[in-house]
Amino acid sequence: MQFNKEKIVATIFLLIFSLSVCQAQIGKRFPSERKVVKDPVTGVDLVFLTSAPHGDSKIYPTHAQWTSDGEWLIFRSNRVKGEAMAVNEKTGDIVQVTEGGFTGMLTIAKKSMKLYFMRRTDNGGIQVMSTDLERLFKDSASGKLKKAPDYQKVHGTIPSEIGAGVDMALDADERQIYFRVGKEEAGRHLPEGVEVQPNFGPRNMGAGPGGIAKFDLNTGSVEHVISVPFQVGHIQSNPWMPGEIVFCWETGGKSPQRTWTVMADGSGLRPLYPEADFEWVTHEAVISKDEVAMAIMGHRDIEFAENKDDSPDAQNPGQEKSWGPSGTREKPTGLAIVNLRTREMRIEGQTESGSGLWHVHGSPDGKWAVGDDFSRSIYVINRDTKNMRMISTGHKTTAADHPHPTFHKDGKKFQIQSAMLSEDDRSMNICVITIPENWY
Image (cartoon, rainbow, N blue to C red; front, side, top):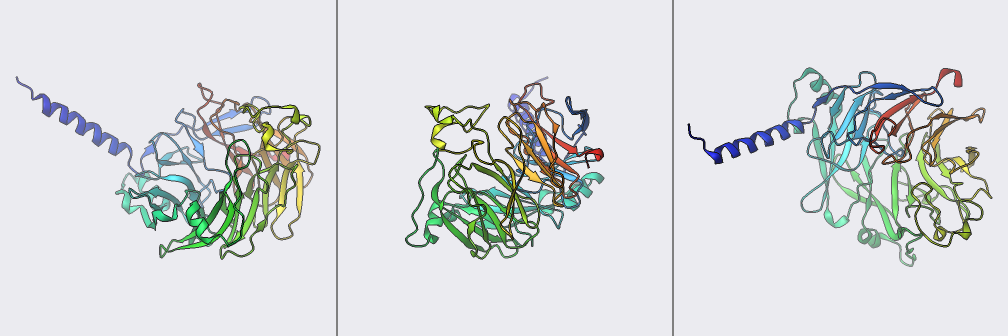
């Protein structure tokens, strides 16, 4: 029997290609990896919704984590490289929710079962897209999946000349998104006479100008919101208040003035929390209709000025001398919450030692605040009693990222990402922690 070598090779490639296309299909289901683990120190149940080493990572705390029905969490993963996944909190079922890739921030709607995301085009533009999660989950469960366009919608394309960044936020009315624009576009809208700021700190970031624009999800039109003389980062909307935006001056660390707020029509630009030179403010997150949580860091020794170089420290970041006279406990530090209406700020709590609370969040009902520290330990604060307790630890300082705790809308539980189960001490998994009843 004679074999045609070229035909055999072609057939093999075709099979491999077909298999990869099949594996990358939107709606593809993966078996549950759900595990409940007792915290080694506190004894609190840690519900790991993923437990295999697939490089999982949660959405950033500035954005929603759960779908509007409260049942699924959206996350990034290498199960299918470049695609987003959803995991059902009760069953542990995992479903692929994008096909064709995405870039930047995954943005979950609060009112509808929609996931919004961006995708780069060949000519440098940015497509704004959404997935109809309700239809997708239903068809995935029944095994009657259709092609990607039946679930994914292209709302329009942001032109390449705008230089759009992929830091996207969905307005509370779910009619428009906000996104970062490039320096050239920001400069075209910067008021005459405004002095552009240079880089700040050892990471050589923060130089302006920067800006924010909005994209209409129905018409595809783009409109500029604001330009500022510094680098813009962490754009987030207030999910309870249409037209309200919170963002930051991004330097990769301490900023001269970190937190800012503005309305969608460009009015009302102001510092959210006016900070002093000695304050290191970071990781702001809108947590309720009227409140924003943020960390005022206390991670530097009071004698930090004796450090004579800018060598980074992975275990204790932010020690470089060129960050300036900030971040010590000579002044008040801790998990702070600012009221957007009254502008009042309260410090809810702080660790007794160590880095202090770093990435912070709070429950929408105003009952709880939560934060992690450099050791990857998680603390919760009862805002009524000011009682603070460590709820979980052991999440490995070698992890690929930080826990980034973020509350569910019911205020009873929050999500983290953790390397606790990883053999390589780096790969992370999705985990949910419920506050014990007796902690109330």
